[in-house]
Amino acid sequence: MENIKASVIITSYNHANSIARAIDSVLSQKTTFNFYIVVIDDGSNDGSKEILKEYYNNKSIQNLSVISFENNQGLMQAYKVGFECCIGEYIAVCDCDDRWCDEFKLQKQVDYMEAHPECGMCHTNAYSETFGVDGLREMNYPLGATYETMLKGNSYICATTMCFRRNFMDFDRILKKKFYVWDYPILLHMIRRCKFHKLNDFTAINVVHGESVTHTKKRMPRLRYVLGIFRIKSYYIVRYGCKLDTMLYVIYKLTRDILSIILKRWYK
Image (tube, rainbow, N blue to C red; front, side, top):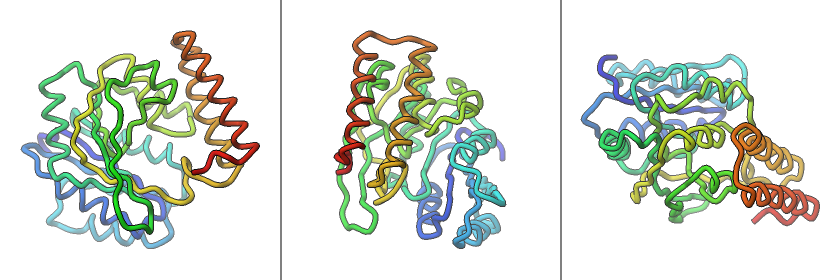
């Protein structure tokens, strides 16, 4: 593995129906540089490991590693191990149930960050696909994310579109905090240290499931998610501060979200 410029992390847990599609979408990337793929299987028991073994044993595929946990250890541990295995200057992510749809995605993002050393994270627009339903919906994410807007939750960024500059990250310390999600605290950490940039290309397809961490009809999982996100915001506000209107909005949103859970009005 010589002259690796970027690494791509793919984490998987019981996604035998989509893991090959995600890997193939990364393998199809056309780049002028070498990149490394790290696949972390988090103790799947649905046949995913057999699929991954075929990729790993395929001699025509270079620069791909597969790490399989014996038992399910959770998404945060999977990403922690994945980040530790990355090499190169840049790190991109492709969630196992999502896929990239632009074969020049990685090249475009690395080219931009090579030309703009102050940029620590480059992301793009994405398509949204509801699992089991035909058709794609365009997701145009906002420009100009800042620390304050991200605390308010007004700058959603699709993880599958992100490419990070590795030296601006502190993933090991952040993931040790065992926050509820991995990407939001890393983004809050990075945006204080570097600039983010959005390319207007549509480079990925984000699959929305009926039941997931962020989309659920059940009260308790929804409450855990709301409180988990609030814990992340509280950590950064206490540690680094924020504007008064931002703090008031964070408190207002927590109150509104809890009321919506009580009344069961959050799900759309």
